[in-house]
Length: 199
Image 1: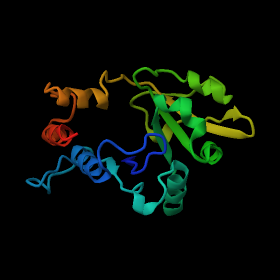
Image 2 (image 1 turned 90 degrees about the horizontal axis):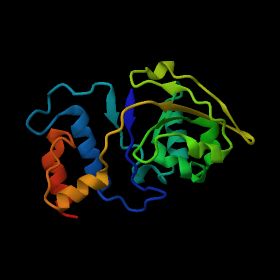
Image 3 (image 1 turned 120 degrees about the horizontal axis):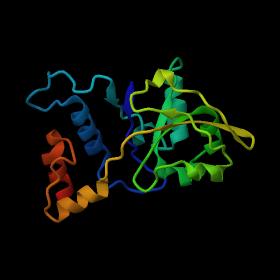
């Protein structure tokens, strides 16, 4: 199962461009395909869910506290935390990084401008990485442990094609009146245009 966990209080970015409730609504609509007119339609992606477990009402917004809370709620689950490679340069500055390094398996996906794991070398990590093909099952991911002074860090690198567009590109297109057709799910296009036109 894959779960989207929008963050209500980002430690590095400050206030989000779009409020938490709207982001939850858009994600759920994208993965279920359900609207007010077809609430009983089968979900588009049955193996994907969106939880509000990282909202302000549950805590600080720190990833380590979120993962500790989820691990307590689901003690038999093996959690992997998916991050974009653009997070790598700041990973060692995440709150309670030592706990995260010991307890969380990171799955790293390429992002525009950051398509390799070279920033991990700055954390004292070995460069040999397990590679997960796009079709790999989470159950078959290798559990690699790499050396870190006094710590270990579990991570997997996913090879996948990158989409050459960013959320800031989409917002810029909306502000300038350009089409975003084909860049966002068709079902969400009217909502995204409406929400970001108000920026």
